[in-house]
Image (cartoon, rainbow, N blue to C red; front, side, top):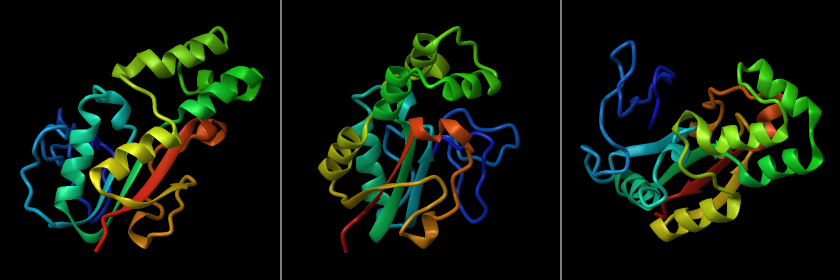
Length: 180
């Protein structure tokens, strides 16, 4: 979901705006998906959720739940409010430098934080507790935090595409399961 041009082999790419290659199916992930109930083994979104209006996030997770087969898994990675606040509170110089090296303008840590809140069309930044609540409200169980590229679920392992380096501490990846 929200793949843009970052396609995964064996996965169906979806993006509201499509992609330069014309591979992605175009639809709004916060509306009913044109997919059958229980048709998917896994759903992945990487740096997508923060672009939704907070009122649309429950609809996204409800649709993911609907299309997943029993025992199916979902991975959501998004900027992490808790990690972002730690970078700010600690005045993490390496994070600020790395953020700039990724091409972003930030005179100081306040700019870095505001970039994550307001740039790139971001609408809402989540922490683990808020993601867990959204996922459990949608019916998911076994909600766990995972490291970049890692997962307890084979299908989700190694699928992350946004290599963050030192900025990984301000990104959260969460996996969850649709009960059988």
